[in-house]
Length: 118
Length: 111
Image (cartoon, rainbow over all chains, first blue to last red; front, side, top):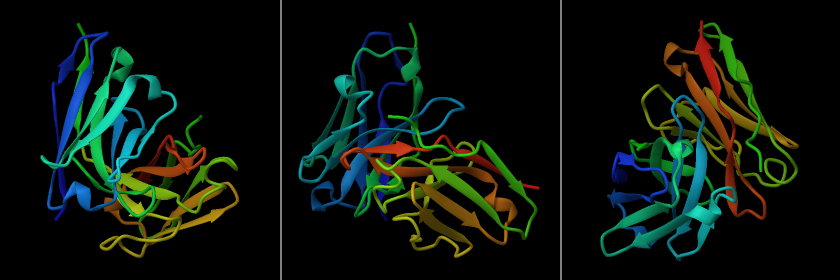
């Protein structure tokens, strides 16, 4: 059973960097598929942020590309998200997920709320 | 890039059928047969219901079906049940198949 769990600070100050980690169990990241981050501002819809394939190829939302980095640590079976220069507009529930053979997302973490506030 | 267009809400009585549309462009929905649909109950993570336009993951009832015509995809839920009441989001790759768009979401109410 594939499980994903997000972790990281729940509060980040404006202009600082948001850093989140997704720990995967039940499947080895290096075995295949792709891994991604999606966010959902309170009361709003889903927004895809970034994905990374097991090969290391990365893909970013064009509207966030200048501030986002996604990476994988296969030794820890984790992947991470960094979002720089955050503002209140980055306040959201952040989900990590595992992709399928194409761009769909098969397994999701439970999400973690990150609030940007001083 | 803009989000895919979904109606904000839909409603129907138990036992009936409802169809939710997802309209994109020739650069996203119209370009790829990779539309997926997600169900989200309040306070929960999204759940994959349909992928690659009309395929159902294991465990998803066959009451859920998907289709696509041109740049518009659709999710049909037949034999509506109370537990189908949720938000539904469509998704599609976009650009040169190098990023992903979501729809704005549709709140489905089972009357």
